Length: 497
Image (cartoon, rainbow, N blue to C red; front, top):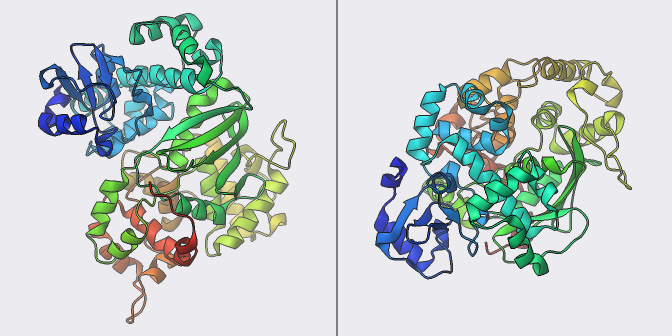
């Protein structure tokens, strides 16, 4: 039995299982020794006896112990809150990197190097906090994603094998049959009537409520880059490039559901799992809003804001370079002005999306901007030079805009780049590197939001005021930024999720 089993209160977990309490969905899994199956707390199956239950912190732990995923509650549909359950920071970062494909890029040694720890130490941390090795976590993710594709798409077996990260259909069939006790074709036949063909692939992206979809769309809409992004009819669309794949995505929230829906069109089906990981990051789907809001509610300066709009998330980034460029363009100008400059940049240097019938374009790459003359789009020479230098630095070191072992190290590395100061570094860390405690204390909008009769707080005062908000200062910052939009949000359609 993994050591992580001991950190879960058996009585609490069993009560949650008996009542099918959705608040615990994604926080633990129940492995039933009498059946060899593991389930979510919300599984509709008959509740097993307590003596037959093992309560595990992750699907990877259940997979490592040889338990099969339940076909009724489908563990792949559990919200991904593993990074928010009190795990040490290193493990949270590692889980995020695994989701973004970093493990496949170089295995455990590469992952440990990215995190600034030794491979042996990383294995110990996973054993203690996740109940499984990094390899088992990756294997569980592959097989659960494959089952998700079987249930929700009309992709053929070869496409599913490639999309889930298996090297061949033969390997996929073998691992799937070992994990589920039956071949994938048997499940596809049983579900065939539920699978509808159509343009692209449509997948569910689960989350833990509450989720303020209106505030997420409001934030993205004001910053959407024409030609690349579009927010209309309560849906978000964008074009993308991911490694060799190009395509487009459209995301929306179905009424009264605990998942978003994403329609994905891609030139390379093997990129599908990476696309889903990017979307989960963009829409901050792995955050535990209940825990974050409860913490921020204890702060007098934030309590009223949390009560009015529970479930506000921090919008992420499809691409770190794109956000870095946007941040540089946004220095000392309004959001609207920065969006205009970004639109001109895309029009001048972005490639048309292959096969698109409309005017959709891809955001320019570092290679395109490193030596480009950017003064023609209205940039000052100093700002154009900063963007050239940023792009050239990323060309020279493609890993430059990846996070470091700690927030302070990440910010220091970013702030050292030409034209990037502390504000820009914190903003990039917040959105592109998913740093929940990033906080651009010198931001004028934050100072305005906390202005009193005595005047606006300084950056130093704001940093001191924000100390009790840790480790979720980024979520506090979003609430303060959204204050200017509260009148809009008051009339926006709310979701009860």
